[in-house]
Amino acid sequence: MKKKLVLIGAGDFAEIAYEYFTFDSDYEVTGFCVEKKYLLKDELAKLPVVPYEEIEEIYPPSLYEVFVAIPNSQLNRLRRRFYDDLKSKGYRFATYVSSHAFVWRNVEIGENTFIFENNVIQPFVKVGVNCIVWSGNHIGHGSVIGDHVFLASHAVVSGFCKINDSCFIGVNSTIVDNVEVGRDCVIGAGAIITKDTDIGKIYPGIASGPAKVSSLRYYKIRD
Image (cartoon, rainbow, N blue to C red):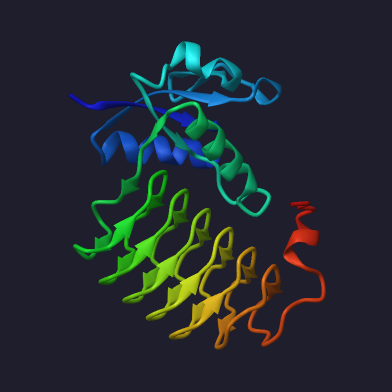
């Protein structure tokens, strides 16, 4: 019998997550959940969309698992907020790993993490909680991906790297061996990172230095 799952969100990523969980996992998606002020439709994929404020009554944590299907909004802060709140309510979280991903046997993957197809995740890698690893990335041996991280497609994280919490790693970016990316960093599409980065900076394109505006100021984060 498949485990019952509720998806938090009703946007594009939630619809994509529905497809993967439905056709490539042992979960049965039973509904979607959004905050009342964003409740614009009552059905998605022929399943109910219900108010988040009523989730414990409609989908009690003793019977349902959840997955927060929200992308990198507000530098992953929105996904983290829901994750933390649901954790406090006692929910268990689903993790999805595509059957078409290569994940070595001793890789550690945290809860509420989504690994798309064609990823290569080598031995001794650790991927934190509440992460999204889109399709086609390479994560080299011994690397550590922190919590609340979003990796877009076709990025290369070389061996023994550390990506700290709440980072965004852009499409086709490259992080060379033994580099540490500070928390709250945005690594732009095509960027080549050859040395440790400062906390809360944007590294656009293939520029060698950070942008003048910090990632926290850009996303209007105050914490």
